[in-house]
Image (cartoon, rainbow, N blue to C red; front, side, top):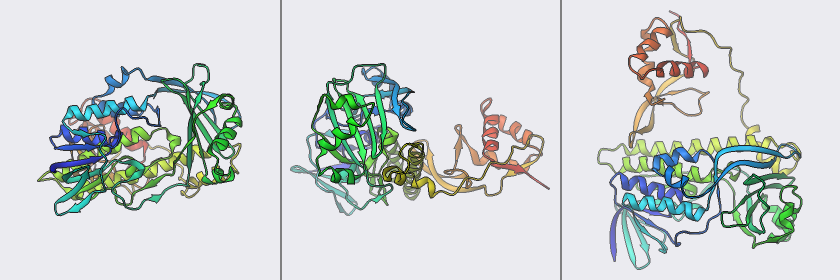
Length: 461
């Protein structure tokens, strides 16, 4: 039996369901294929405060807030040195991933996506005008395919490691530590680091991140390795005295797919790239890829859409995410001092060592009464960006000190505002012109942003 569908999404994790919900809401015929039954057990219970704006975009803030998940306000941390700190992490959540992922899947259903759970898809096969995806006895004939199968990467293709190989080991410990006002714990050891959190159903999830060589040195015995790491940690040692459940292993290496999108397929979530677990932002990163991919796919499928702009946008989005996450992770690893000379830590700081030093900022100059221009190195260049529900090309501000082109600032398109610079006798006149075009206070805020980043210079006649 053959069924036609416009978009077939493989995998119902946060990336796949986000993409499905957004595309279905935009009027596309979407089918989601998931091999497991929901709610499914899943590791990765910690969400940072950055997840809330993404949930707003999906219309899920209220449901998640009312789901009974545990707020993560304070964490016990040993990182920079041997001293323990209690670190405030307001706005974070520790969730039951089965329940959280089910909320996202329900949102996709409500938007109109067809959901096929307990359905194992075969590797998609290209054909003229799209793809054939075998799902049991039926074949889904799709115009577009999205791979949201995580590290399985059902679409295949190679990936490129973007950080040293990392092994993740995790187990549920019983009984969990007594509540002490904190929800999560993080500890840095000589050969890796530990993360742990209370589980909503009881017990305590402990995770260790080490070089794969550590497991070989333990004779391949996962339990022995994890027990030794827990015992060596002042924050986790009490867990080693109780029952440590079956230790499971997973690859936690960062990587990226060289070509995450083309005219008939896209990779989202960890099928597109994987970030360091140190960030505790895997879920929101996955949701972000789903939202970005939705704009790109919607553009590609539109009769009048700029498909190449969409492809360029999503590829640039992925590159920027990979680079920024790698830099942030390396900076956090470099904060650890006690074992800085150990191979595990030295390797993970290498991304910072490879970056050229940042030149000190020049002292600010009061430009308000002077004629201004764009600073040296700043230009307006065509770039792909999201405009409404689609990807379009717009002129954007680029500069070596900006980590990515900026087309919109505070909701305002920047290039038409910058076009005014050569016409005005002073920055004050520029701001006055902008005031007539923008909501109250927005013009001054944009001028402040440009000056703070050195994007403006005095214009000499």
